[in-house]
Length: 90
Image (cartoon, rainbow, N blue to C red):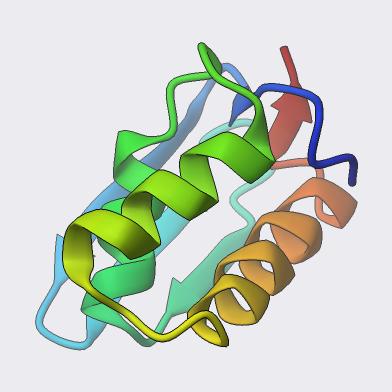
């Protein structure tokens, strides 16, 4: 994962908001990933691949008045989804 690159969901991957956060589903291989935070889910849903990851994280944290440590959680989730093949650099 590179903070200077733009990331987006892979084609045929969808994020569905849930009571617990969100469900990330890959329609090609039926792989699931559960996001257990509404804030992280909101960040992932808004990730469109149009801005560098680091910039998107910083803006999200500033808009929500979150502590700087929230960046670690957001970046961890993006990294995990990239390793699973659910997000990719744009």
